[in-house]
Length: 427
Ligand code: SDX
Image (cartoon, rainbow, N blue to C red; front, side, top):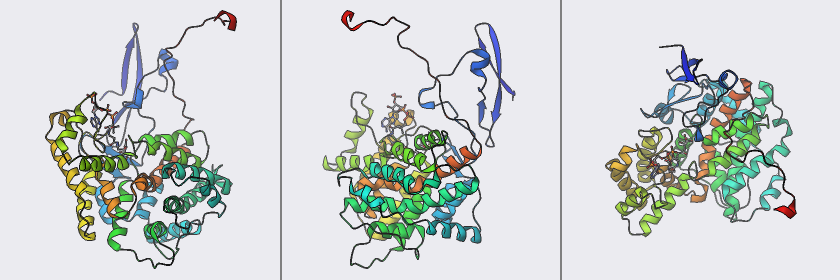
């Protein structure tokens, strides 16, 4: 394979080095393109553009492969627990017992959220969307943890990291309790990370809380499946904001806002709303398949399609199987699960979807499990954010440790050429 790519333009030839990744992905290194050829590239949505080199997550969209630090998502979902995966993504290795115990203890030490933060939450109407509240609370957390901003040393980074991992579940639980008019609580250090999250979300005043192992296991698996996904929209946002050295919490807050969008993490909420709409309309999946294919109809099959996966999203396969298991264990009958399976079957046999390689993605079945676990639909994307937190942290840390430059893309200007100012009277 050649070591350079040659560009010919305007009678001149330019050579640019080739970068080859550990999974044989090939990139043209165009760092000197503008200086040498006076050219830039144009790639809206960065569909063909690598923003960085990264050692965290590998995915192969054609083959439907997803690995965190080399470990297959199928193995991690089955054999690991969420905090082990958090450690793996951030520090690069599965922790031994001593490392996991220290990491867990450090997180518990930082799982308290300042009482004053409750006043900020008080300012929101109950109707506020939880993702907007969560993003605001995460940013507000900076004011109570100023040492989390200027983190150039690995030790300072570690301290900021355990703070946000410890406090984030409290903010997420408070966001849900606010909507349910429940008093704001604090964590229980005697519980594991995921059980503690579940307890904070669901415990009721005066009632004893007893976790169902099937529920905690399902939640743990869903958080693992959402933990990282290389340079997706929200992670690229975290890297971009982090590249200005705005601090970890500010970068995470921006990532939450990016994830909120219905084309990204907000799709899990949109999927359930879509399935409910189809059920209410009589359950005619074929009718909605036609709408999804009609260019004049704004309806899209939410939870279908992916920028990178042109095969089954491996997470969707695991979640679909888990949905059957969890609903069976909980004795929950959810008619929208059958509607979802009907849509999937039709799409996999429909030329429009097959030609465009549109398959179910991570968001297509996840909402069905969240609903069976009693999580309100407006909290579904918050659950996605709780899972994605370690991925955002890992990617931010990698970018900072590698001292990557501030993100600042170029553009092709298409506006007015120079023109003289016109006084008001002559316009
Ligand atoms: C996530 O990037 C990540 O890794 C994201 C994520 C992660 O873990 O971080 O995996 C999480 O965001 C999953 C995606 C969740 N979003 C949705 O489910 C929303 C519905 N899906 C789409 O809007 C769409 O598929 C995207 C946004 C996911 C991907 O869009 P692309 O890559 O820009 O593809 P496109 O819009 O250019 O579509 C290509 C063609 C178009 O048709 P043509 O113009 O070629 O005729 O496919 C069509 C699209 O109209 N198409 C769909 C469709 N998705 C794409 N048609 C109907 N229904 C859909 N869902």
